[in-house]
Every structure is written in C-alpha cells, then in structure tokens.
Image 1 (cartoon, rainbow, N blue to C red):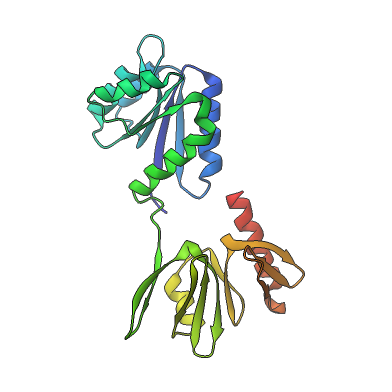
Image 2: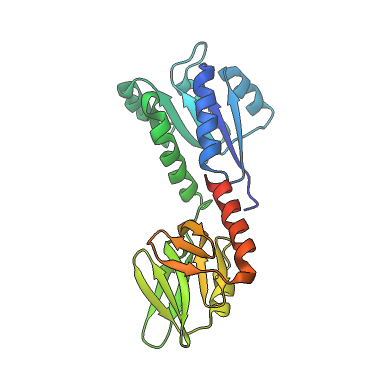
Length: 241
C-alpha cells in the first residue's frame, strides 16, 4: 500500500501517549502509518497552522488550557474529513460530546483503551478502504460466487479443478492452480508444492517437510521448496506477531 496514514494522539498524560502509540504500531505493522504524539494541545494547533493535517485524531477530553472538545473543534475547522476519537475516563462526559457539531467518530474509555483502541482503528481503516477485503470470483455457466481471500486456508488440485478450502466450506473452480494463483495476486499465498497453495495466515506450524494448517490438515512441502517456504512463513509471522 502506497498511502501513508497519519495519526495524531493528544493527551497530557505521557504514559497514555506511549500506550496509544505502542498499541497502534504493534497492531498495524503492515499498514504504512505515521503516529505523532502531542502532550500539549497547543503543539497540535501550531502544526495545524503550518498545514500539518492528520487523518485520525485521538484526543483526550480533559486537558489543561484547552480541553479536547475545543481542540476537536479546531481540528474540524481545518479538516471536515478527519476522524476524531475522544479519550476519556468519564463515559457520561464523552456521550455529551456528541451534542457538539464536531461529528466525532467514537470515544474510548481510558480504562478499556488497550482492548478497544485497535477495534476502533480497524473500523476506521475499513471505512477508508485501507484494509479493504479482497475476493476471488468463481464464475461458470451455473453459478457466480465470491470467496473472501482471507478465508482461504489452502487450495489444491483435483483433476482439472482447483479446490478452495475455506473456513466457510469448500469451493471448486475449473482452472489450473497456476491460473488461480496469478488471479489471486496475494502476498499471503504461496505454492508449497505443485499441487497445493497455502495461505500463510492459516499456517499453524511447520514440521520437517510438512505445513500444518489451523484446521489441522497436513500439507507436504516439496523438497526444493522447503527452505523458501520456511523463510516465507517466518517472515510473515515476524510481520504479524
């Protein structure tokens, strides 16, 4: 993804800022993000005056000098499209914030921040198509259906058909695995041997010359591919864990 997502976090509590930054970066290693933290609202105002605009703002409601509601109003004056998420220790106060014309996207209770921040951010990312789900389309004379790529566990050859094994059942497409692989165009999928493509997201473990999927199916790796497959899985896990 070429787009860089710019995120600002504003809170006079330095420890809270560290937690926000850590949670965002750890959860979204594969998204190009820049996280800027501000321990004083005025620093964000200065940046906005210099035309520094972010895509998402996490703003503490109660801060000295200028509170989060006032700061969010200034943000909204500069950007009608920005996503504003309030941080607060007081749920009733947060709910009242919606009476303002700020059009805040959401609020997060600070004592639930580590649990809810990631899910809120995921919703925003989906909304702006950063993490838009991709599908593989199966089309023949009888039916037309789409298969969510992230649901594919593995694909294997059966006669002239490619069989898609997914978390929601199996699908069949009358194409070669090579043709299917080129149409999928996903970095998360790879051949482990001539007759099988696996989704790295669904690999549970690798033992000797076998990959074990999260549905406990064992798929052999061809000898020439063992090193390449193990390296790809290790790199995928390093990116995601």
